[in-house]
Length: 109
Ligand code: FES
Image (cartoon, rainbow, N blue to C red):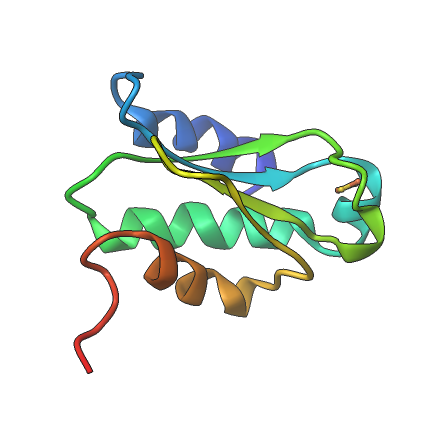
């Protein structure tokens, strides 16, 4: 599936937009794309779909945030909290990010 196809499917993950949405944004500007942002985005979309979470998680792309040498960058936006930025993200990091940020997803220790 192409990146464009995934973006189209991603819209189905969004559901109703509201103030309580949980957003995961992948920098999609050239330096982050060259560092692998497209694969990170695709992994996030597929992982969120596979998890069938109880909360709405929007996966989207965003523009450059001027930390290009640290890319791919992923920003997690949670209502009422300060944004969390992850640097040098790989597709293998995606599940760990979601476990850290999505309430109830982390496995009990
Ligand atoms: S290109 Fe991603 S932070 Fe600049």
